[in-house]
Image 1 (cartoon, rainbow, N blue to C red):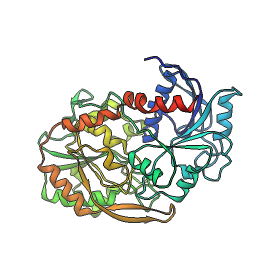
Image 2: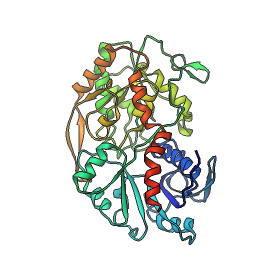
Image 3: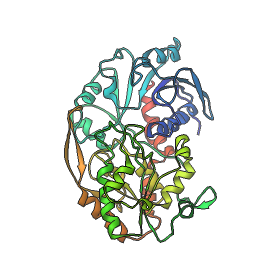
Image 4: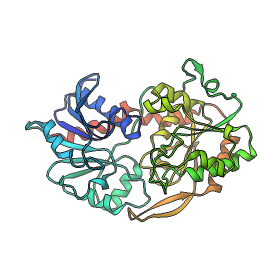
Length: 392
């Protein structure tokens, strides 16, 4: 399909194509935007430092600006956007794809900003609310929960979900080897998967690793044929937890937990490889203190894998009817002045037990549910109508 949109957009986020949630969404988006004829630049806050670069899509060469001097690169958003705009008299805006509270108080009130906003708390952080009320900011909610949260505060927003591409489908082989054989497992083994970045502030982990691992320890004690695959770096390199230490403290046998190849992880698994890993799982354990969206849940379902997820924040709206939801209790996040929820370990354990008893194999309900988040549908149904209105 041919589009003919006119406008200049600077995407302020992780480098598009980086193996992060923001990087994946950024790459999908710049591909679609350049196909539609838009002039797009990438303003990196992680993934490029020092020198200017470029990103080649099928339709254009996208200028790629490096990180700034401040922690979240807020110091370079305005000058880099203006450099990309180059004095053109044309509709334009900066599109942020990151936590918006990091930009509050910066001199950004004289440029048009669209903020694709993650709302991962059960209540809206006051700094997110303050940013979103600014006259030059248009909030985009990435989940139905996020849009309801904006509505509850009387803030107008638009809903545009995250997406996945066509590589995410039931996939049996990885590096030409059946996925279970590649992982050193038997087809009869019960595999629980986690695709959750091990990044935190060193004290509180939003991905609830301690709670999830304790529940798995209790589950594994009853089911010795159960294994856990964690698609994350197990070290504290990125401010996360020492997952090996957690396993030892909880009595989880070392041989029952699998991790990705660290060198391969550093450069990122391909989409086809990730699809095979998702397909190998009997269930994805996707329970956290709160999700702004949670792309792995959608990717897993597109591959036919059912999900155990949190019953709060964005997650419940993004799971098929044959998934499992766990309960939690409020947890106060003092720095952001808002509530998370801590998942209840007995509830996680119960969901693991239910998934163990359930029929195994591809879930057609999950596959059908996930189709609404395919990038082509998200672009046609959400991005195009929004951009046509915004870039008049």
